[in-house]
Structures are given as C-alpha cells and as structure tokens.
Image (tube, rainbow, N blue to C red; front, side, top):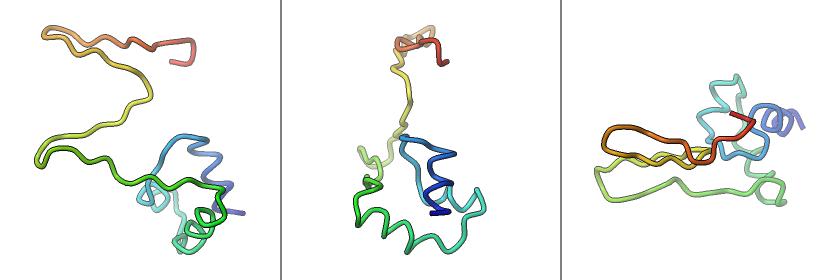
Length: 79
C-alpha cells in the first residue's frame, strides 16, 4: 500500500520507471511492484526502443519541431 501511495502521489496515471522510485527513497520495492503488476493494478510497459544509436523521448504534449522553432500543439490550461 505504501508503494502504491507513492506511485499515485508522484505519477498518477503517467508512465514511470523503477529508477524514479529509487530516487523517491522507495527501497526493496521490486516484489511489491511485481505484485501490483501481477494483480493488474499497474500496467507494465517495455522501454521505448528505436533505431540503435538514436534518441527516444516521451512527452506529455505533442511537439512540432521546425527548422527555426519548436511549437507545442497540445498546450492547454494544465501547462
């Protein structure tokens, strides 16, 4: 319950990685995290992968990268 509370408080429904739990001070969380996944409370996602040597990023907004500027297309009241 403590781990689920930490996840809800810090990430809500957004994707996160185990490394971030370590940074928040959660220790010995691997079995609890596996249990949350096994019972369907948390949905596991594989790491984002692309062409070897390229960069991959995940954003909460849709970005349009132009030669001279960057534009956030999905900007709303929450940002």
